[in-house]
Amino acid sequence: MKLQGKIAIVTGASSGIGAGIAKAMGAEGALVIVNYASSQGGADAVVASICAAGGSAVAIRADMSHAADVARMFDQVKADHGKVDVLVNNAGVAVFEMIDGLTEEAFHKQFNVNVLGYFLAIREAVKHFPDTGGSIINISSILSTDPYLASSVYAATKGAVDTMTLALARELGARKIRVNSILPGHTNTPATNGNFAGDLGEKILAGTPLGRFGEPEDIAPVAVFLASEDAHWVTGESLRAAGGVRGVGY
Image (cartoon, rainbow, N blue to C red; front, side):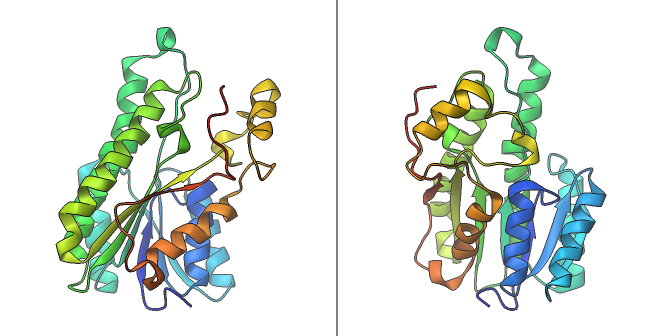
């Protein structure tokens, strides 16, 4: 029970990697706040799964790109549970489009959720962490360093996340707050359904030493580690969880 007694907020946790992380943290003893923006049914299912396994969880709706929503969620968690120990920034959107078809709306949507949303959550979290510190885990992507076709803006948002992670690790270290990012590889989730079909999928698999696509359950233990005391000397790191894939040459 690596997270016994911890209060963990996981954003965008109604499905995919966020749901996997929420369930894993619940299994390790954390009380998990399952954040969602629109899929209440998905969030409720994650909560039910955690509770059925003997853990504790509640679902809270908040659009992470809206400062008022983010502040309300953190205030509610503080009022109900007294503190926040772990923040997992996972909520994100992706629009894969070649540059000549990419709209300003799509640009701003991705930066508002994937970068501004992380910033807003971290800004609130540092107000509510106890004096003993806390752990912030930002979900990035291997596309931040190895983007494929039609991912220019999405990849740019993840590059920003990695840079923000390092900068805030340096800024918040004196307050015993650790900040790290996880760079998942090509992971099967509802959001990526169909993205790895055909020639692209074959290239990815051929370039992946472990020979398969990832699953949320492959990413979740890395997040648990970073949230736990096992990682008490780890901050400012960007950890790849990608089956060894590098430089596929899309």
